[in-house]
Every structure is written in C-alpha cells, then in structure tokens.
Length: 230
Image (cartoon, rainbow, N blue to C red; front, side):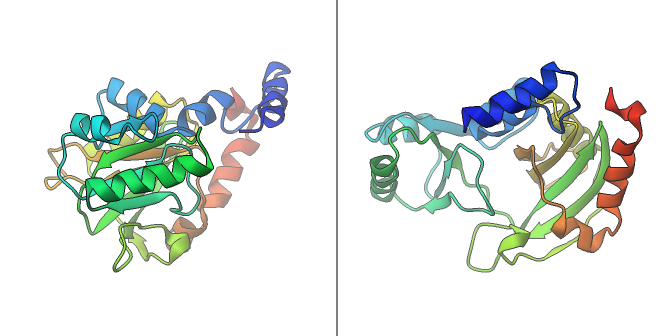
C-alpha cells in the first residue's frame, strides 16, 4: 500500500522490464473482494462475499450475505500466514469485532463470507497458464485455517480436469503469470466446480517444495529463457 513502491514498479514496467507478477495482477489480488468480483465474472464459483463499509453496517451486510452463523470475517487486503481471518458465531460477536477493527483502522477494508466446512483446501501453482504443482493443505485441528506456515500438514493431490480448468481460469482472470490459486473442493470433484477462495500474486513455495522438490528451480529455469519474457 506504499505508493512509492507501486510507482517504482510502474516505472520498471513503463521502461520495458519484466515484472513477475505485473502491477495489475498485484492490484487485483491484493483485494479479496476485487478478486471475488473478477472470478465470478469469469464464471467461477466462490464463497458468497459481502463487504462491510463501516462499523454500523454489519446488519445490512449479514442480511445480504444470507448465511446462517458461523460466518467468516476477513480483512480484504492480503493476509499474511492466515492472520486476519476469523470465524464469527453470532451477530453480537460480528458487530463487536467490526467495531474493534475499525476503531484502530477506520479505512481497513473488511468482508464477511459464507462458511464452508471442509477438512482441507488446495493450493495450485499456475505458471503461464499451466499447472506447475498442487498440494492438499489439511485444516489445523481446532482451527479453520490451513496455512502450512502456521503448522498445517500438506500432501500431494491429483486434480480433476474441472479443478485444473478453473484454477487456470482464475489465474488468467486476475492476469497472473505465476500465482497460487486456493480453492475448497466440491463434494463431487469431477462434476461440480470448486470454490475459489483467492488468488495469491506472491505465493510462497516452501510448503509445496517439500512434496514436489524442484518446483522453484523449474520456475527459475522458465524465466531464464527470454522467450518467456513476452
């Protein structure tokens, strides 16, 4: 959110340098709500997501969401290692949490989201329209998060054709060349679209590298070839 940083990247792009990812991709992915809009516009399925505009807006937003509690409360800006994601059990808890967040940062963009119970989610690494790797991330016991950096376990997973298609679509919709697409699988993975959770413009490779060694080297090899700079 530092304009000096974005101006520097803009200068590099204007001068013909390759930036991975582009400033446009970063701009889309830095907002979970914006990403949700873009993905839905591309025909993807996402958890229903509603922004909260101000501290007294919780009742309107909850009514528009139309989901029973518990629901998810998130910072719409990019979270780090799962920080900024809460499960909310009641309207009273939601109102108090929103008031607290906006007391300390009145311009913090926040959203509420339907809660989809699952034992795991999936991270897919997309490189220039192709699946480079994927992993199943098991939800931490007693938590709702599945971040490997927070202690969640990861294992290899074979994607269905539909999951591959939608992951690639999400990357293209956000104009990402090297991104991590996170989704919750549907009950019928072969026939029902997954729920796209977010597209990460700066994915970490530590977790997936443990189960798919050499992935980072493959990325570097890809971009060492200047034919791939276009």
